[in-house]
Image (cartoon, rainbow, N blue to C red; front, side, top):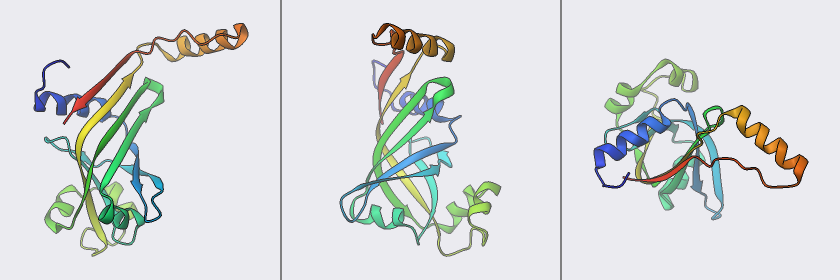
Length: 167
């Protein structure tokens, strides 16, 4: 997108990740090592923030105290869509918000329900996102890769669209 319009940028981010159920949530741990774990994005709000449930008993909860800068990456290989969101994680203990976002899938992970004192939220205040959308289909990509292997060349694959979303 050429001109910056926050609501358009947020809409673009939402459209890119809306069908991707799981993300890899990366933090920096106490030993200064990158740690990624699969998480389910519960919501992308109108400001472009990502919301996740977690527990106060997790390393994720502890990691973001000292190093709140995080990355959340989404991948949908079938559609050739990849999105990397950078931002700052915030620990949220708001029972009303926890209850408002509650759903049956969350209940499976937290069987004591939204009143469980260990159930909390993490909001990632998104600062930017990069995305890659390949326009070629799966068969075209597989054919180009097989051809490259047989001819000892690099695949001639259309890289598709790549862009940055400013949030």
